Length: 226
Image 1 (cartoon, rainbow, N blue to C red):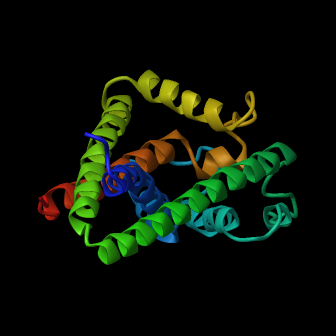
Image 2: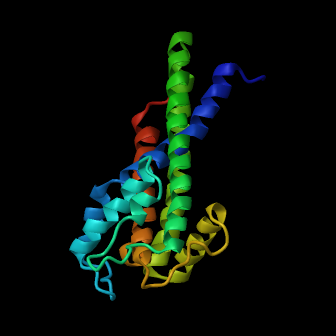
């Protein structure tokens, strides 16, 4: 049986749902709320070079704000410690420029996914094939559940059983988006002091949890349509 346009668009809806849910999770994690929660966790590692929790809560929001605003890297380059020394070195600033490009590219994909989902929803409503649209949402939700469980398993194993598992995943992730070893720094560098590996473990874990919640909500919350 030859697929109809509603069936094709329903499949497209399913493909877009993971992008929509992951983008939503990313945007939440880029908020100061996540920083506040993370730095107040009892297990969060202290900075052996002297940053207090208050220092981290003061400096880290600048990094997150830079990733979502339209400022150039001088937004971070102009930040200085009390003794007048720069907060970030040139290597860190270069990496943050790369991170900003990746983050803003991901956010643009998120916006595009939401826009396409809204447009398809409008045509589904006008064309009276909302059943196909809803089924696409449900199917995409379950796909997201599978992806989130896989990500959560990798991070969970990395936290509780074998740190090498998460490090290998983390390395693979960076190899996909950054060149060479441009993302590797000394433990004394500001980026590592503000965002140690435990920060990234929790960030990926929370992204998985948020996306999983959205996937389950779609998968179970929407009734299948005939």
